[in-house]
Length: 130
Length: 136
Ligand SMILES: Nc1ncnc2c1ncn2[C@@H]1O[C@H](COP(=O)(O)OP(=O)(O)OP(=O)(O)O)[C@@H](O)[C@H]1O
Ligand SMILES: [Mg+2]
Image (tube, rainbow over all chains, first blue to last red; front, side):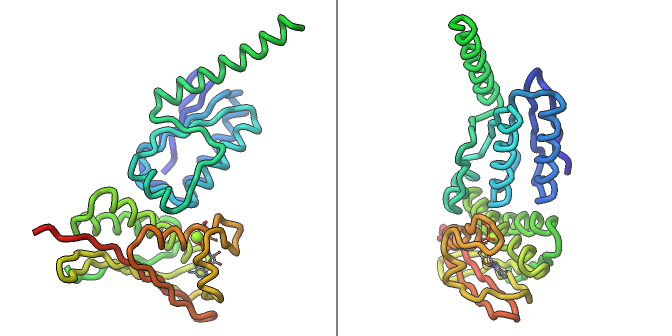
């Protein structure tokens, strides 16, 4: 089951549509990292609303995606973790340390916009000071 | 009701189908959707361990009644290398594969009963159960 990746401005949005196998998750990781470079994306959103379970492999892969994307200059936000999925994750001891999360796609986009704005302001600050 | 569902585990697709079958069975047994997710997550970890360490195995799923309790019983069996030190494997963070080492201890936390029998060179059997009180 391939995960569709949409390009929206400077962002890439991967919307998981159904349960994923380990191979599907790894393929998603590869596709996202490749496209961050190809489209010079500044943000990545992975929508996991449709995921019925987040186990250790899924969490590890999402963490890898976020860390690799950051190394390529893009910020990642995981959106749509369902309450029951979150409960099971906590019991398993799984965390998304160092990875940004948001309630849903809208919040995720707003988060990335804010991040982009801050980045811009930092650059402007340097220019006027310099 | 006492019927057993057997899911062979030989590829990552089977991990997904085992946890989906577990979820369906839990739903039939009246578990809340939160508990269904918990059971599915535990199955996912144990099924992946079979695949990763033993290459193949099977997961048997069934429902049981015990007094005023309804339960699901999940038995995961493989004829893989076995676990030399089960107590250690059940500790958070212990992994021989560079993993998070959370699969076994995490599944144990998710379920009510959890038992590992492993004989090095012969294989591993993980039995886990989840119970719920039947409402009259
Ligand atoms: N079915 C099995 N056969 C043989 N060894 C096993 C089996 N299941 C678990 N083990 C051993 O127990 C260890 C702990 O398993 P556990 O699932 O907790 O962590 P992990 O698989 O290493 O990492 P992860 O957090 O990704 O699951 C494994 O590293 C492995 O050595
Ligand atoms: Mg494991």
